Amino acid sequence: MTPWQEIVVGQLGLGPVWRLRDAPRRDVAQPHDGFEEAPAAPEPQRVSSSPPAPPEPKMPRKAVMAQRAIEPAPEQRVPAAPVVVASDSDWDALEHQIRNCTACVLHQRRKQAVPGIGDRHPRWLLVGEGPGAEEDRRGEPFVGPAGRLLDAMLAAAGLSRQSGAFIANSVKCRPPGNRTPETDEIATCFPYLRRQVELLAPRVIVALGRPAAQSLLDRQVRIADARGQTFSFEGVPVIVTYHPAYLLRNPHDKGKAWEDLCRARQLSDGT
Ligand code: SF4
Image 1 (cartoon, rainbow, N blue to C red):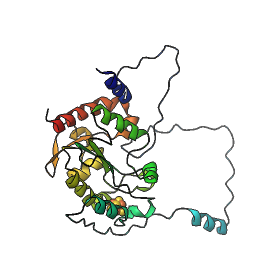
Image 2 (cartoon, rainbow, N blue to C red; image 1 turned 90 degrees about the horizontal axis):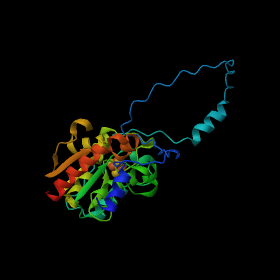
Image 3 (cartoon, rainbow, N blue to C red; image 1 turned 135 degrees about the vertical axis):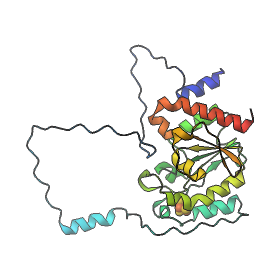
């Protein structure tokens, strides 16, 4: 293994970790991001010996109204308008259309739409779920801890955002509170992803997580069942693996993701 591969495998957490016997542990923060949460353990019952607190005084009606006025408005759920992407739409036209799209409810609270980033002649197209808060702010998909892990995964495959890989999402606007996008939102946004696939003509598509897989395969998907299979979208092979945010919370599954990347590499390189 080359020194660079050793670094990458270390970043993915696949290699042994040697630690001085008395050295302090450095635990990695696990961000909440709404992807495939493991079932939470039930909260322990708290028993207090102190007497119950007196009820909070009621807020005056005027104060309640003022409070409501500064809270963000809930999403207005109106029927989504169909997205029509011209079959000859080029990158500029496509990105302009995405950035100005108001077809579904997700446009209401976005800072900006996030079309995607990367090599426009890629070997791999990686598709995630949707932008999070930081992505919404910066206009780029997969930033933050999950993005750094994805970059390490790409580096392990000899790819990067600059060379060989393009990264996009199933929905281009941030679902409020980082919730999972609704099926109708994914369906409304789908023509943009389809046109991206046409323009990119990748050798392989890697679906990161369940919503991305469902978007591309147009069916309900369980990651555990879909892993190891090769699907097809518009003639391009599709493989399904875990979302990097899930892997941050479940590092014991990084080995499976590594296997999936090796399969993607076999498909893209014909080896
Ligand atoms: S998520 Fe997609 S369909 Fe919805 S407003 Fe954004 S770009 Fe349009």
